[in-house]
Amino acid sequence: MGSERGSALVATWRRWASGSALLALGIVLATTGALGFVGAHRSLFSLAAPLALASVVGSLLLLGTLRAEESRLARELRLTRTGTPALRESAIARRDRAPFFARLLSTQLGLAALMLADGDPAGAASVLASASGLARGGRVERLRGLVEADIERASGEPEARAKCIERLRAAAPLGNREADLYRLHVLSKAVLEQGDAGVALEILPELAASRDQDTRIYATWLRVWFDFDSPDAGSRGADHAEPWPELAEVAEVTEGDLRLAALVARAHGADSLVSKLESKLDQRLVAIAHSEGQG
Image (spheres, rainbow, N blue to C red):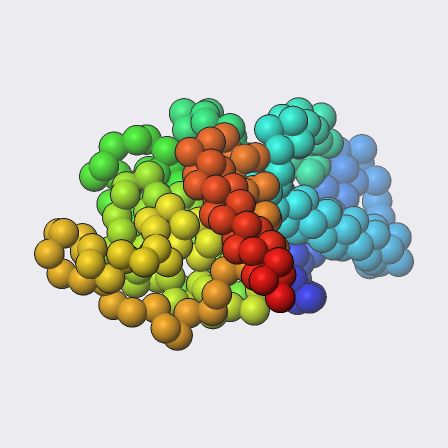
């Protein structure tokens, strides 16, 4: 059930087919039990039509619920990355009002990611532990690994952040846009919090070369925070002895990149990063104005 967002995480054909089969079996068993309880002398064959209808209706309801959970998960992952604190809080509150049937098929991964963005790792771990067993396996399980890495990052321990960075760098893309952007988001935050300029420089070229604007946000964060574009960048290294490799192949940061990167950083309360991004933007605007004045 892929779309322009990439491969589905929850609403997969396999999950729908297996769920529909279990639902149909449950309907048959429930009907058999009810007939035996009331002592009705009717065979299941005589009820084939209503049983088939009930199975079809149940299957369609299941499909709708899976697609709703898929959409909800994508929205929550997007809010985790780009939403303001007020929007994240509203999304968390809406989860508490979800119908019972929807909770049975909830991965709880989006909710956990939102809570981590709001600085509540303990709550996120608790929510993750309460996820329904009916929504496990496949890409959902791989996404769960990303959320668990985010919990490690949020712990604040250098060793845990290092483990988070290692896990996320080793993780293969899921093929789902929001899940893959979430991985880059957590990885970039972990690298910034760890202050690991060496790792930042290793992952930067691929991020900066992307045509996706959301991906370039994280390249802009890393470039500006570690001053990779400053005139003396070549004289600095992770050990203050080895020079940085040249970034000639990396696309230049644009004004749009700086503005969007600052907007997202502000939503996460990264005031120091926002200051550096806005300073870089001011320098860019002054340079443009000076150039136009000379022209």
